[in-house]
Each structure stands twice: as structure tokens, then as C-alpha cells.
Length: 115
Length: 113
Image (cartoon, rainbow over all chains, first blue to last red; front, top):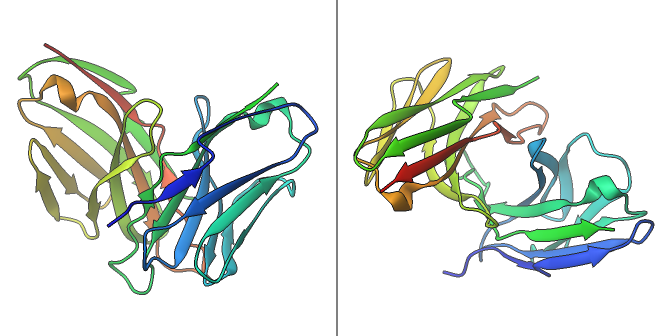
């Protein structure tokens, strides 16, 4: 079974630009979560989507947004990039239909560098 | 607010030297505690899920245990390939849909040949 895939793997942007990251979950998984990982803060939850609806949201500014499509693929968008947005962005998917199916499986991440 | 504290931050062991990593947590009601392994530049790799105090799970040289306030990841006779950062995360009981994972900052484990 193919794992979680994320594209692109690496991105370099400049301040003020916007960026869109893509995530394809494991086949059959309906929940997709996004995390930001930095050396200082560790893994911080951004948001979760389930059946095209945002279920949870972390404490990030409105510049961070996302969506999920009917095939469960998800995108996240960051507008007006700041230097502090440089991080590894991780996507995780889970089946999420009942207790015991909540394990989240992570993709390889997208390394975003903002110059 | 849910909190996860992992200790030590870094641990260096000789090959074959067994030890334990600690994960202390506070959560309103625990739905699950998760252990992941992360290699540099890669996404976290799932290791274990624990659901209730007293539960134990094993995989090769790793064994995870859970109490009401903490979890331990025991590593027995480690090998250099066990070197990685080990992450612990908790998920609270469903509360108006707020079931996000809260992660600790990890323990960076180095096994010296």
C-alpha cells in the first residue's frame, strides 16, 4: 500500500509570496492533518480535514489555510510568507472512522525556505 | 491545554546499552498515546499506539508502556540503526471534534558503535 505522498519536497520562496503544498493520503484514509515542524517549536498542529470539512484548527494566523477534495487529497496554502514560516510541513492521514483507527501516518514533508 | 514533556532531550548510548525514554503528559481524557521515530529530514514513522494504563507493546528492540501520567519507551540492546529522534504524542477524548495530536519535542537518541 502506498504511503502518504507530499509535493513538492522542497520549496524556496521570498517574503510576501504565497505557496501551496499538496498531500495525497493513504488509499482509504479520510482524515488529513497538517503540522509545522521547526527546531524551536517541534511539531505544531495546523488543521485537520475529514470528508472535505475542517474539523480542527491550531493556533496559526489566517494566512494558513487548507482544503480537502472529494478524493481526500488535501492542499494547504500560506499567503504573504514571512521568514518565520520556514519549516518542514508535514501531512498525516488516518482512517478515523472509529476509536482504534486514529493512528496518523506521516508523509516525508515539504521543506519550505523563505528568503 | 494538553501538554507533553519528553526526557531526556538527548541520549547517547553505547551499542548494546539498554535504556528508557520518558514521556510525561497531561490531558483531560486520554484517547491514545502515540510513539513515532523520526530520522533527519524525514517524516515521523509510526511505532506504537497505547490506549489505557497498563498496556504494553513491543516491536523488535523497543517496548512501550503506559501509566496514567507517563509512558516509557524501553530500548533493549540498541544498535546504531536505532539512532533517531523519538517523538511522543497524545490525543484527547473527543470533545466537540477537538482531537488533535499534541507532540512532545522529542528525545534525540544516538547509539555509538
